[in-house]
Image (tube, rainbow over all chains, first blue to last red; front, top):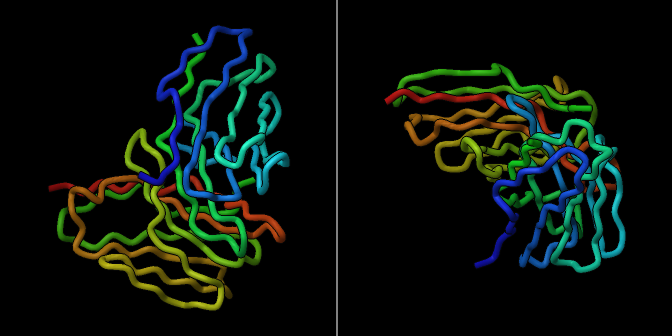
Length: 114
Length: 112
């Protein structure tokens, strides 16, 4: 099955810890994205990558880091510098070779600080 | 910053009625997309309308785009309980990138 897979579905983090959220796609898409969603809110862009070994900050990149070593993978690390990390995190991908087309989303990771 | 604003924030209708949601945006766009999100799940793409199109249909969905007013509407006809979800508009107004900017969404409840 082609698609985009996020893991884990639920993640609990102690204060001061770094945690990494996984995102893998087998759609052969060039572009990948990480969004954060808070209750009753829209999606805010954290980071995006249009090509392997390159990524750009989105609107709320502070306290987060990413890597794009492989086309299929775009992991997000939530660092201890992120003061309010409890949220729903969504990864997405799109073909990225021409004008914007539809984005395909994973099922999300719900991160809770305990 | 959030480019799109959906209206209303919440909408409750009876099964069989039509549901209309609106989206306003601020700057020029290449296209506008609508997505659906079931509670606690990822987003699913519904329809894309390009800036040179005025209306588009897909099954029970009808989307209009008015670039002079910087607004779009999503109409769901003959709604079903399974249409209960949040609906988001997204625009790609940032030149040279493939970023989508999402609004806060309209929460639709369809009562059986």
